Image (tube, rainbow, N blue to C red):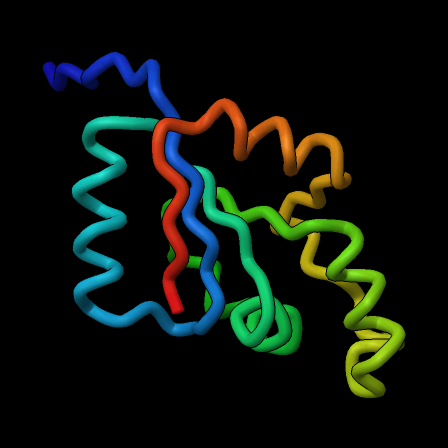
Length: 111
């Protein structure tokens, strides 16, 4: 039987570029052994994965995006205007985003 460590702390990673570099992927995997991982897609990563959501099908972590950024991208990126947003990327409102960030033990940016 497998024993799963009890994870009580959480960390937030902002993912700006996709795919993740090897060293970022290794850091993410190591962090997930010790704490709950929250990934927030932003900038290039959000745009890329919105256009090619199948890239996340084998990704083992839940990803989030901030609703304000989603709305801004829809308004400025013509190719995203009519494209449906991936259903498996959870949307955060601004208040939830701030709360998650404040409750986290670590906030890191993958650029």
